Image (cartoon, rainbow over all chains, first blue to last red; front, side, top):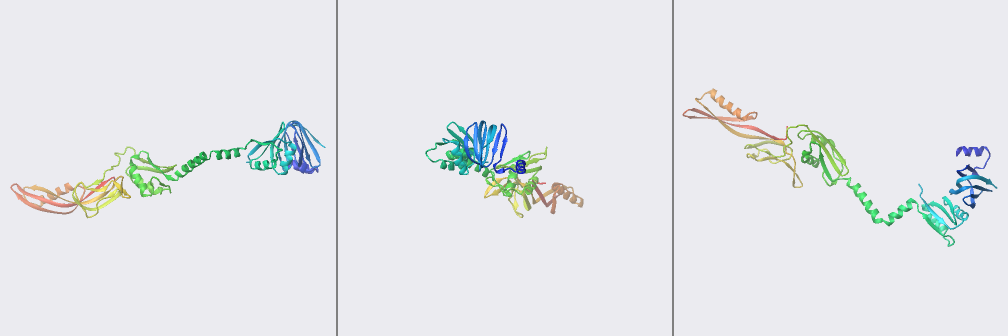
Length: 81
Length: 298
């Protein structure tokens, strides 16, 4: 995680609203404020000013606490709006 | 380690997660199961979750309790069983603090009584609290017993094991009989290493009288043990020596006869008388000697 943190910092990104994706396995989202959609094929959350949509198959929220969310399942696509 | 309880609620994941997030409740394993939303929360948060969804609009049920909660409920349901189990464990632990049995093992197992008496003298008895034993003292005392070549003490659970090994092929096992006088006399001295001395110095004893008893007294009761020690008796005896005529040589022979009877014992006083008969003279030598008797000693 330190490496990712360093990379995000060097790229000038916002770590508080970072999204880490392991394709086909999981997605890790930070700064989640609310859940917009929750189905096994699509989970959409509000993170900062963005609506982050994770699409795939058999999606489930493995953990959600203090804005940190881990989505498990066959993650196929992540969109930002 | 947190134990999680699985909850099912008839509500949209969106609103349910929003409420849980606002309340700062960590959730895991969120799944949509048809109209229901299933999720896991730490056991200690279950009441809080039910409070959040207390409104009749929500149909909330516990799907599966966490292992800790299940264990707690099991304990509550079977309180007597748990109490019994706890009592058993406590009794087992407590019994380890006591000596409930003393086992004398090894080739010297026949020395159980003297070993028990040594333990008793060191303050170790059955059904007493185990405070340890002065092992060097016990070992040295047991090693002083006849034929003992090795001794070790070990407490396992509530049993105290004393391993006693005796010399292989030793002639005979220890004598458990008391020390008895084999002649009349006066006690000069008495030493009882084990057992109970029954006479004191200066006391007259008869033949067959017990000098050292094969027991020790514990709270007024006789506890059998091996008698070990010795006694010195001052005994009187006389010997007659017949000779054809009275002479210095014959007198010396008469005293020599007395020495022959005494053997290794020491004569402390002697005197003689001479009487005449038809065949010559008879020397009668009267003497006092120190006679040493011992049992399981030396």
